[in-house]
Image 1 (cartoon, helix red, strand yellow):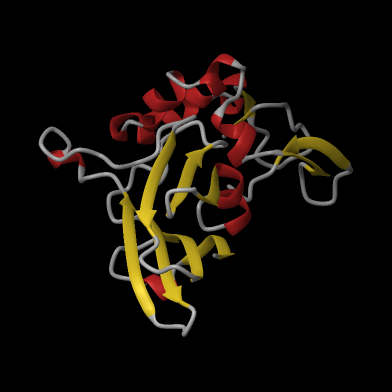
Image 2: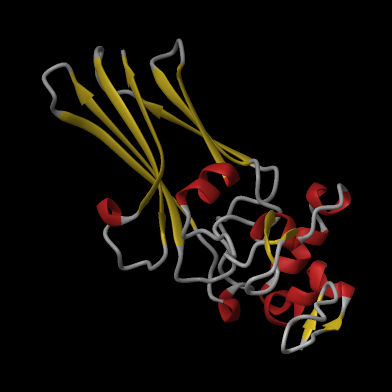
Length: 207
């Protein structure tokens, strides 16, 4: 057993290994998929952020059963299953342009790797619906963000959002007056219907 700190009162008495607090400990599983290289090339790595900084944030809690609270890493493993994690990773902005178009900006502002992550059966999507004053649907647009399977990456481009990247979309409104609804959703499995995905952001505008 290993850990980042000594725990002499624990029955397992783990050996101290400082790398347990460094991204290198994640490499054996995640480097082949590209996530480690994405982190290494990001501004987050240059600022000193490790994988554990976000996925295992510091908490005040006992390190062993019955022990006193200490400053240690959380073992909850924060991930894309947590809507708060997703909202911290990706931003969504909308605005009406003077030429009768809608501008939508989706940006990777908080993840040190591509979003969605390395697993190819996940998807983040941007859905925009425009209805007229009578409530009738006049336009609908859907953008997909995902990574291809590892074996297909040489021939199929990724549509993931890279760390720090902002993706811009502009759509014609299709009506002089009405309402725009914009949804940013995240699917843990591709076959899940859009309306049963994790809702990350929802925006609404009237024009």
